Image (cartoon, rainbow, N blue to C red; front, side, top):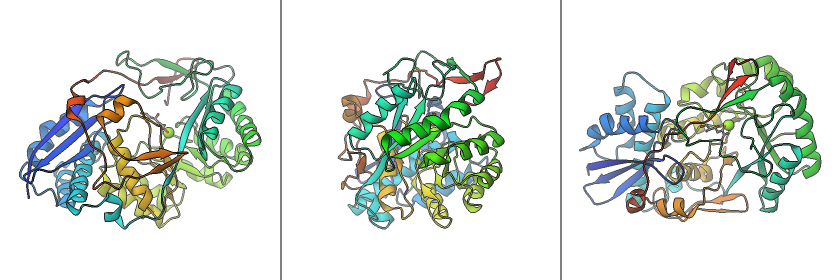
Length: 408
Ligand code: KDG
Ligand code: MG
C-alpha cells in the first residue's frame, strides 16, 4: 500500500484551519489538522515544501516509522511548527488505519473506558454579575464544568478572555483585522485582590457540585502564583490553569509547597520532554497538551501513558482554533484513556463549520459522544473549502500600565 498524494488546505469559517488530506493507491484517504493558531501558514508551508514530497510512495500503515523518520530526520527537533505539521500527518495515518480496520479509532487504542467525555465550556463576563449570567446559561444547558474568566475592577476591557461589553461573547482567539495585535493592560495586583473572592462568590452561588476552572494564562510570578493558589483554595477549583509562564517549570515547586489546588498546564507544550519533569515530579494534576501541537496521536498517547503513572489526568486543549479533526482525535483518546480528566470544548457548531467538516460526533448536555464511524469519524468537503482562504489575524498582547510587555 502506498501514499500517492497529499494536499494542504488553509481556511475556514472565521478560522484559518490547516487541513491535510493524504490519498492512497487503494482509493482511501486520511485527514489531519495542522492549525497553529495565528501562525497557520507556517506548518502549511512545512508540509507542502518538505514533508509531503517525502510522504509520496511511503506505506501509510507504518505510522510509527513515518513519525520517527520526520522527527529524527529534521535534526532540529520539536517546536510548534514542526510538531503541528507532523501531527497532521500522524492523525491522517491513524485515520487511514482505522478505516482499513473498519473501526472507530478508540477501538485501536484499547476500546472504551467510558461512554462519553465530560467537557467544559467558557463562561466570561465584564464583571462578576455578567460572569454569573454567563455561567448560568451553561449550567442551564447541562454543563457540569465551566471555565470562568472575569473583568477586573480598574482594568476595564482587559483581563484574559474577557469581553469588552456586558453580555457580549469574546472571540479572544483571533482578531482578523490584521497581524498587528491589540494591546490589553494587565495588573497582577488588582487581579490577585479581586479574583479569589470572585471565585468564592461563584462557588457559593452555584453550590458544591459545579466544577469550576480558571485560567491565569501564564501571568503570575512564582511567588504570586503560590499566594494566589493558597488564596483560591476555599473555592475548591477543579483546576487552576497556567498560573506561571510554562517555561519555568521549577516555579511550580513553590506553589505545591503552599497549596493543594489542582494545577493544569501544557497547552503551549509540543513534546513529551516538555511534560516530563512536571509529570514525573508530580507538580501538576492535569496535562493540557493538544494532539495537533504534540505531533499527533502517536506522541500524545505516549504523554497520556506517562501521565497515568503519576496520577496526572488529561485535560486536552480545545480552544476554538483547533479544527474538528484535532477535536475528533482527542475525542477518541478521551473515551479510551484510563486517566481521562476533562476536555475543553467550545461548540464550533456553525452550519458552515459542520458543512466543511461533516461528522456524527455529538455534544449533548456538556458531554461529548464519539462517532462510531471508522477512523477519526470526520470528513472534509473540498467543494466547501473552495469558499475560504487565509485571513491574516492575531490575538492581543498584554502590557503593564507603564508599558512593559507582559505575558498574553
Ligand atoms: O492561541 C491561544 C489560545 O489557544 C489560548 O489563549 C487558549 O488559553 C487558552 C485556553 O485555555 O483555551
Ligand atoms: Mg489556557
